[in-house]
Length: 81
Image (cartoon, rainbow, N blue to C red; front, side, top):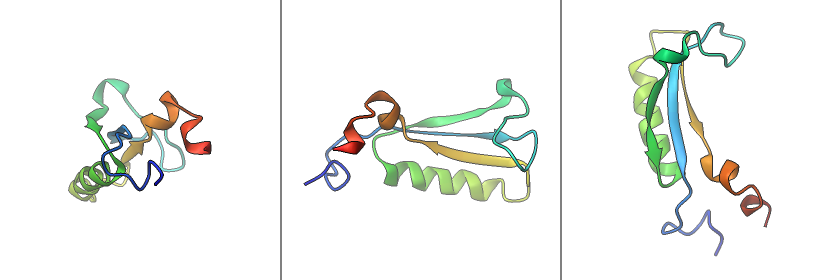
């Protein structure tokens, strides 16, 4: 069973968002105002929160939320096995 299939395996994900400086990029307009939503132990729980935050800001075209796969940054070899 791989880490992706094992629900007990912790794969850290970070949910962040904020207003972007343009619709074409992923540069935040003001880093002091970036919404650091939180850390989550798996993609499913991060996705649930990401979806809620994204739906709350649907009327703001320049506001975006992202899921950052921290486990890939902390242990890049893990996903290649």
